[in-house]
Image (cartoon, rainbow, N blue to C red; front, side):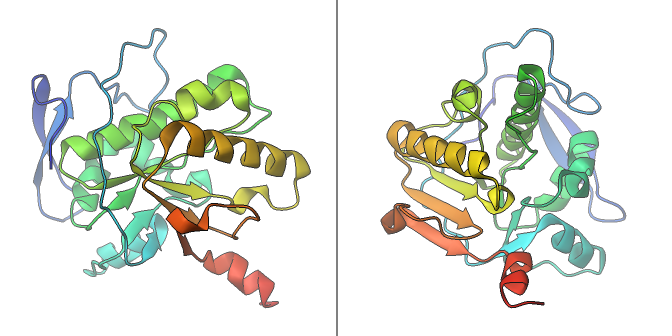
Length: 233
């Protein structure tokens, strides 16, 4: 797999807890400052690389993966971040440490720091920036990344959707829109924009199946929390 940013990188070492120490490639264009705050001036970003052919056999939440890893267990599942933001804030604050951990997994879905409709433009851009910076760091270190695509309203498409390459493998979550008519409306609008502009080769879907989705290019994975709620547990 092609490694991006190869002409301008720094090499450092990092380990997660008492695990193996890894050499970590840090592209110098990435803004990996504490908290991953949006810089005052966005420099031109390198394009993401193609990830066609990535198909997870199962998904595991980052919290569960970290718990297993701490007990010496590494599953063959794809790690996802469809969780409350606070449950993976650590990867924003310590990106190199968790890059070292995730290098042990077959593939990951890029982070899902929330982008809410009622947030300011700066807040939405900052959250999308964090998701994309971490994904670029992981790709630079050979981690296979499925692009998580999330959005707010149409004003967010340029930095939430249009940044990804066409014909790639993406992941979309709909768990957070239940019971909110406005969120559902804008989810459908964004979904159509994704299909039109990205023409994804495959969509990994997490959460309830939504009416009218393109099921021919989608693979569905259950959200166990929602499944339990459906069954009254």
